[in-house]
Image 1 (cartoon, rainbow, N blue to C red):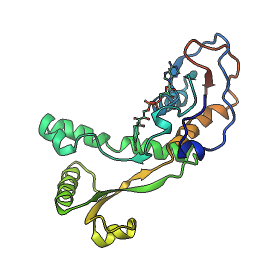
Image 2: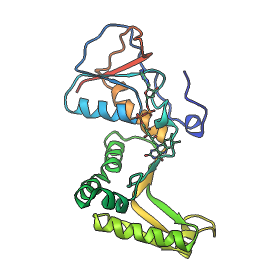
Image 3: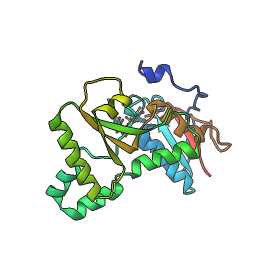
Length: 217
Ligand SMILES: Cc1cc2nc3c(=O)[nH]c(=O)nc-3n(C[C@H](O)[C@H](O)[C@H](O)COP(=O)(O)OP(=O)(O)OC[C@H]3O[C@@H](n4cnc5c(N)ncnc54)[C@H](O)[C@@H]3O)c2cc1C
């Protein structure tokens, strides 16, 4: 099965075909699904010394991981101020301290495995009007109370230097945000399995999958 047609699929890095699982095999942990969740889990496990098999039914990055916006955003689906008011300061502090972990894991994987996925640092939250800009300022103050000191306010002139439009009255620039080519990140995270001398290419088709890749370090 091919990746769904998209810019990302059209600009995906070349990679060798993955081995199919055609045998009964044993391993310490079998991870099902070659998206970010499965790939990252499998990488952590092999780095910890486990014998891991990753099964993917279609292709690495076939699901949301190969088709998303590629934004590395240090936030949650609710603002930290909302989390604080609803669940208290202790929970907000705990979640605030976890906020950077995802982005840091992505950056460290890119560096460690030399993943070619067009990583660009920085992310912008742009305001179309003064009300939105005031909300962004309030969010910045909330985040700063929980340790996020890398948000910079941009005025109308500064945002114009970042994006060539007069649509915005200002913005927040998150220096710890970023952007990646999502499918190439997934393919790059799978590469350490493929390039390993320990890869097993033996196999028999499993009920749920057409591919298995294996690694033990
Ligand atoms: C339109 C869109 C935009 C997004 N933008 C962003 C963004 O900018 N930034 C961000 O951080 N997040 C974004 N997300 C969210 C992010 O993409 C997902 O949270 C993430 O990709 C989920 O990864 P996953 O591995 O859990 O799932 P998936 O990537 O969906 O992977 C699941 C994999 O499991 C495989 N599978 C399913 N069943 C089986 C089976 N029985 N056997 C074997 N394999 C199986 C599938 O083929 C698939 O490859 C976006 C999501 C969408 C949909």
